[in-house]
Length: 297
Image (cartoon, rainbow, N blue to C red; front, side, top):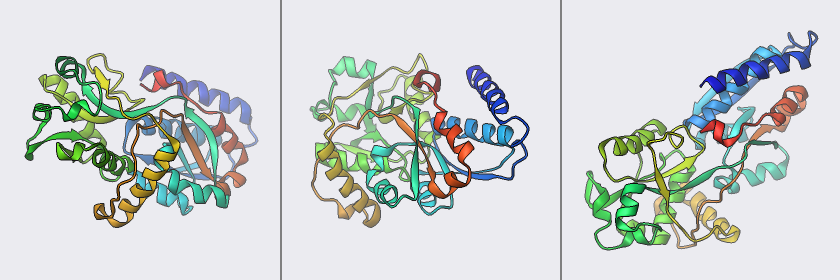
């Protein structure tokens, strides 16, 4: 937190120098889209502070899950999103990028991970290294779902995030659905609490999660990333088509396709082309903004 405060102060000072007095009172506005997880909240807060204090703009922030926020962005109701997990949204982003209505603003964080994780204590005790290991006899019982005790629980994304449906398809393709529920924790905070609570109580944890996040930066959270089939672009593309079909038509639209690990990727920023052309100086500033992954953690 101290780093974040110092970073904002430093950036605001630099923005002020670059603006001088000519543009400080310029008439401008921006509608930022924010999401319900902490790394996105950090980037949105920094961008909001710099645009408002450095450029004198009116800033509006709308926070929500991936699906409604990105829909509003594609529709031009939101001007800028400061954290985009592009590989999760490739089928949605492509037509708008090809139409020229949205544009890249470069990288905000250079490295990220998404995966299925197990707490290290349980993984080491039972030799759990891969998603295949999670199907060994009796393993699911270590993670028994109190709401469905005939299966184990894999704590997943919330249903408003695209990764919830990705994880559903992965479970089907890997055969994990026979042993585990794809549990929706209800919110990003509840997902964090489920993991942190498991560690605090010494209970086994099996969960989807990602980095960079403040949770994964805590010294008492020690998770093992489960091995999956290596990322393959063609496989991911095939899976993404099924994912978007399920999002549009429900889980009965599932069709066998393919599954592989999430791609470790740089997270990006985007703006609408209309807003970028109307606010070139601010758009250029946002292109230059980035944070190292360890600082976000």
